Image (cartoon, rainbow, N blue to C red; front, side):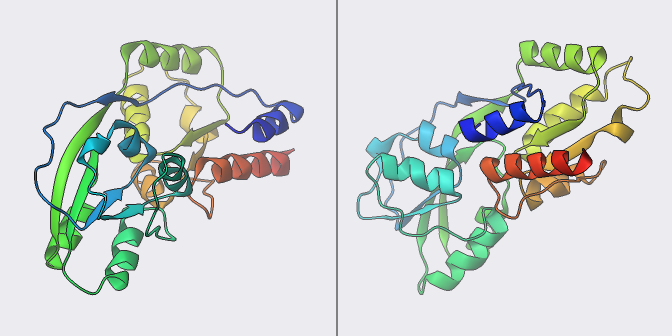
Length: 230
């Protein structure tokens, strides 16, 4: 959390509690031996776990999200295309209008990645080369922290940055035998973007969602909501 946002929460007497709902873990993989025209980095973690010895310096680079693009630039790499919308459907729509010919795309991602990019691009005749380079795990120690938090004190707001973090939260909470009767009715849920929001809205309501799909804007929207509630 940016320090200025954190200080704003403190000034408004808001207690911030962070519990990792999905820790990323390296997934061993074999190096890609094929050539490609584009490489898609769809998260900061994809950059973190990628073996850049595989990078084709002649390939164009796509990045989803400001933080992913910044992380790549910090490594000295140029980002050739960044979709305005920070989710897979927007990527497919914008990039498909940008390229003129069939392309070979290399897409390193997590084991829980949605199939939107692969399915849409292959239908359009592009070749998509995949590599699973990390996975998400909800550690037992973090599950216990969540249990103690929920059973010992009321929570007003909860923020989710991915569908998988929501799934970890919901599936764990639903197993609690001593869940407060008003837990869901009093809880206000914030989602980083439309994909995460849709996953949540299958069972619960989303009250906060930023127009720019990143964590700084999500924090800002939460702070604005809290101020309105005062």
